Image 1 (cartoon, rainbow, N blue to C red):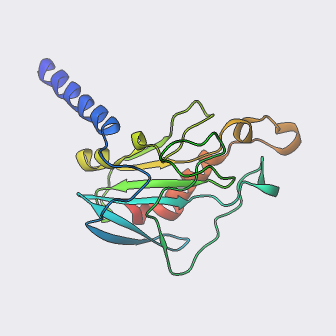
Image 2 (cartoon, helix red, strand yellow; image 1 turned 90 degrees about the vertical axis):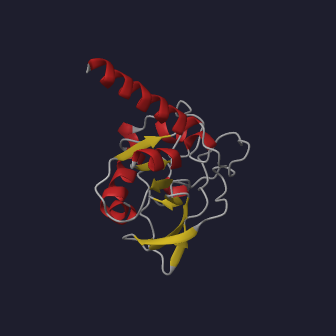
Length: 200
């Protein structure tokens, strides 16, 4: 029994690792969709794609401006939109040296990407993660961040974010302006309050 459990665990771990690192799709583009899918959020309707058994929504704003008067402060609120907002392309990453096959960095970059097997409100595990890069570089546009294989093979919802990096995220200004780097709290709130019920 112990050997079987261990073998099952190692097999699952190997599949999960392969799912993270062997995505065959370029993350920065959508590829050809099997069909388009739409869901309603508290801020407005979004349109993603369904491809090979996974619904994907990219570049969803979870916070507003973090530039100008909002720099080093909690992000501005998201502005609701009318009509249907396309969630087909990844959003801009935080300020950093340009990276190949990824969007150009911008000053406003609070976007997240979601992969889900279906939008049927089934109770699935939700995997949240921030991209790697030592909080200095990186973005959700990297091909290694694609969550479609995890969603497809393990029936989970995968949520990945862009967030503030470097001095714009970690310069300590608590005595002057209050605590910084609140982005993780914001995207958690966005998902639970505004997006997750419809995105699952």
